[in-house]
Image (cartoon, rainbow, N blue to C red):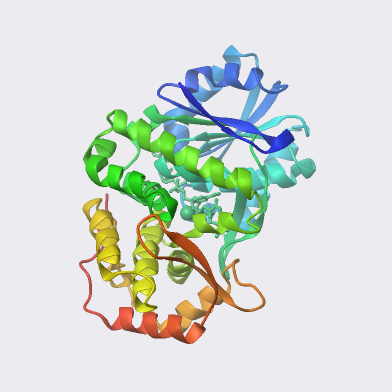
Length: 378
Ligand SMILES: NC(=O)c1ccc[n+]([C@@H]2O[C@H](COP(=O)([O-])OP(=O)(O)OC[C@H]3O[C@@H](n4cnc5c(N)ncnc54)[C@H](O)[C@@H]3O)[C@@H](O)[C@H]2O)c1
Ligand SMILES: O=C(O)C(=O)C[C@@H](O)[C@H](O)[C@H](O)COP(=O)(O)O
Ligand SMILES: [Zn+2]
């Protein structure tokens, strides 16, 4: 088993990465916290597969548990589902020192994490991440929250977990489309500041997808990268914004699609957004066209979309995307901030990006030849 430590003083915690960790969940919790009662928050898909093993692991460590099951999908990151989860925690008379276990992907992690942050002004949180995206990104770092029609994750809190388990065996049941989407966030770490990791991914992508040792290695390297960033800038006062590479465009597309999974899911938005961020960097004269092409080639080889025009359904207008971009949490004094790039592994924070240059760029992208349609069926 490998363990990555997230160093945050008294809020430090471990991220355990290995196969078959769930049967020892209760033991790992008991070693780190006063664990007598827990609420397992999960979605219907994950619950069907992993609720029973989690329940058993808790019972083996003499931890009583209740379950709260929500519908799968982005729509559950909503005020109404948040209210339901909080009310069920209260109805079950869970105390402040009891534990909320987020069992699932990033949707459950963000939702249950936010519920844990606000119920009784903060319960203990354990993340049991079951999607690739949750294992490499969302379970680590303490961003929790929900979506609103105005935009993605606009309501939430920074709230760190006490423990994170990335049981890599759970990835064997993850649908291929969801694995590909999580891979976008893996590639992100290479693109931000680790060109060697990006080259390693170019060499080892097939092995990562087929679940060999490379999959575990990619997850460990991603978690270590995220832990380093979070430890230096927990609340995104500066460098943590680099983790948002691709997200300004990606979140705007998710919101414009009304978070509809038949059109786009988060990791796909990040893939398109990262490809766009590199093309926009070229447009701004900051980056060589060959770099943007290399990024696109790698994402496309992983089966990920790289152009807005490949999103099924109605097209977008420049103005609706600009409206969503204006709601981005990185906006400062009304000015747009983007994560741009000078090369592979050379991302940087660009403040005060001129809106008209973003507009011109988006209009150009929308006018381009339609890209092959994104396969959202599997
Ligand atoms: N907090 C953060 O730092 C952070 C980081 C990245 C993304 N996010 C958020 O995470 C969300 C996306 O997370 P996601 O991609 O995990 O999506 P998700 O939580 O919707 O999970 C993807 C799908 O796979 C299913 N699933 C999950 N694990 C499974 C397994 N092991 N076997 C079978 N099915 C499984 C789920 O039921 C769901 O249908 C977005 O809302 C995004 O905004 C948050
Ligand atoms: O942890 C972070 O910081 C990230 O930006 C990770 C992103 O992958 C993630 O999607 C995050 O939820 C986006 O943050 P937001 O602040 O733009 O909502
Ligand atoms: Zn993300």
